[in-house]
Image (cartoon, rainbow over all chains, first blue to last red; front, side, top):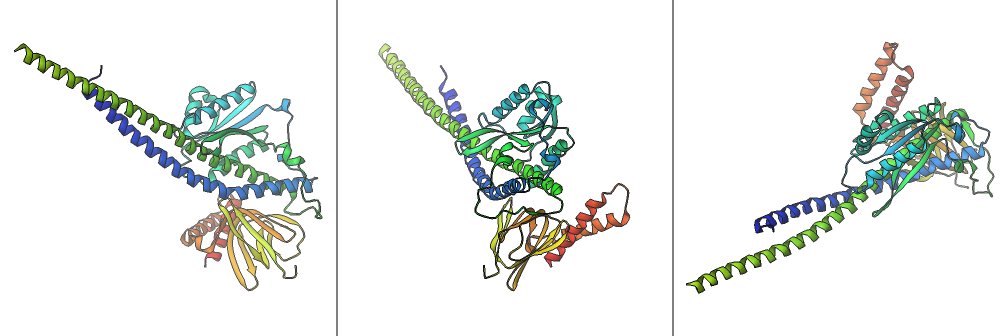
Length: 293
Length: 133
């Protein structure tokens, strides 16, 4: 049985842990709020780029771009995987899920060349330990100061790789922010463009649709557009992942705070029992001593 | 549309910068400046570094643009760019320094300098300074 002093010490230490977890929860909530605003702001831009791309591909169908090459599944022999993690832990299964999924994809593509691009310290640390030869590039600690050029850097890397036929496929794995309590694991193919983009018809049949006049050449424009599209998709994934991380941390810290509360309650109860017991024993000792006199 | 109006929208990853009816816009295309009035044919172009000017009757607004796309279709002008600045956002001293650096690089013509990048940097800096004053 623990002594009164031990119990008191445990209660105090849990109380201070509780303070930390509840503060972390509030910090995460504030950060989530900000991150959500940024997603909302980025959305029209991402949608516009995508619409533009669809329009060009569907209206000016004869245009060609080296980005439109699409190797058949069995001909694919090199893949780039961009795996987006967080820089910090204490957010439930957030980081493990991404790592697990990435490992799964690697296993599915056994025998092919795989280049890993790790975003976030947690993923980088994991793969440095388990599959160090696959890591091509890592971006750690970029979440504190997310700027657009980070996604542009990654975009240049994969886009050039795709153009020079170093990569036949470029995949993106990240946690998407669904709501404050749920995140969804997303695996997305960045390059080549997904089929759905090409086959979708424009939904404005009543209007005369002339092909766009393009300047400079269509090939260069398409290339620029596709690059911008990949860029914004990565940027969006970074934002989504960051929001999801904050949401996951919020939930995890909320649970931790609840657990701490429960433990404090239990321990306090035990403490009172113990104190009562001690007093009773003391009284018995005194009264039996008196009797003996 | 009797009122000669175009509808302009400038979208950036940080949100919609501007959305209003205008009468004319001139912008720096990759192949040179161009102007757009009402009734333009569907047109898509990428933007190079330069100054975009938006006219609404007599009032005029200037922006410094570095890259992006401009489309016009059915009198709706969409500017989609991740690098655009309003005059008051421009850091003049930084732009001045950038101009000097670029000029120096172009003057010296060392072999290892990327001339195209230096030129683009110079054009960006000049556009910034012009808008800012």
